[in-house]
Length: 137
Image (tube, rainbow, N blue to C red):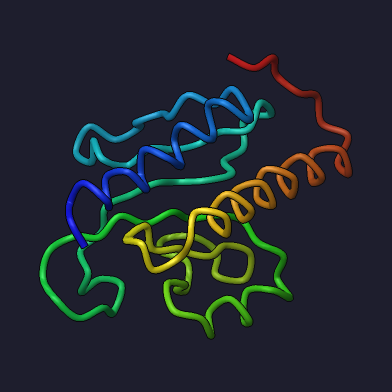
């Protein structure tokens, strides 16, 4: 897959988050400028876009691959992980988070749907706990 196609997937995720939820990506780590956190208006993360060494994910090949970490219904994680393009969550709680490859293996519709589920789960958790929300940035 061409680098332009892969870059488009990353850009699509970030553009969707901005258009749908008003979320500007936050680059929290100077040492990892390609890592972008997507934060719900309540302050909790609903997505993280990263470029990760393939070997750290147990993938063959050299170099990095773009991924998206999303919160997911725990009972769906196992089913997703049986499919190509889905991995145990990288640096997140694997019972509640899922890593999705942004290399074209997973179609855009599925990625957008998962990002929406993640956003909703974060919002649902906030309502259940009765936390106050911050105004969107």
